[in-house]
Image (tube, rainbow, N blue to C red; front, side):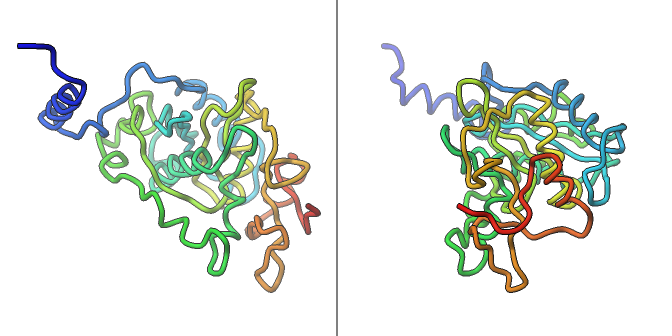
Amino acid sequence: MGKPTVRATVIIAAALATLQGGSAQDQPRTGMSCPVDHDQLADILKKSVKPGGGPSNGGLDNNEWAAVVNRQGVVCAVAYSGSKVDEQWLGSRAIAAEKANTANAFSLKDKAMATANLYAGAQPGGFLFGAALGNPPSPEVIYAGTPDEFGTAHDPMVGKPVGGTIVFGGGLALYDGNGIAGALGVSGDSSCADHNVAWRVRHFLGLDHVPAGVSPNMKDAIIYDIGPDGKSPSGFGHPKCNGKEDQIAVDLGAGVSGNVVR
């Protein structure tokens, strides 16, 4: 018998994966390149939210989830800022990963797109209306494993593509010295506070070498230019939340308040 063809090898691998409890896509990717590991992410996240002793980001000052994907959209790390898994909104684990997936999917080597920048365009009549329904998340990946592994170095999402498209604040592309390296998603508070936390985390990771974006001066900053009529002059605006998130964003360099001249 000769050597199996490439097609045969793929079929065999898929069959073995199925026998072991999942499709080939569900299996963790080995040897993948990642910009951040779990311990880095967890440490910086804890320092970037008020419950961990960090600064206020506005909103509710909740504990947060964070997730990082690599450029291929595969989850590299998932972490939380509290001391145990239920000290932050449980539903935000999946949202953080989906925000990371979205920022990675809509950003290019030469132009970043924060999830906050997608809000206005995704509304009815906008040029991205319907985008939030595209690329649905994989429940098989999100709900795999057991809750005691969530947010640890062994989170069941790690090594797998999670999918999902989120069109509000909290997701940022990651840029090293060579270009885009993946993306970060943060969730667990208002979407405006999530954006502020993500901005802090990305900066402390040293992965904020953003080349350009839809916000002229601050690149992929959140743009608070939606007026009383619900319109965004820039086309990339995001609504304000109920706290001081917008002012904190401006102070951080993470946001633009008012009309943006393009």
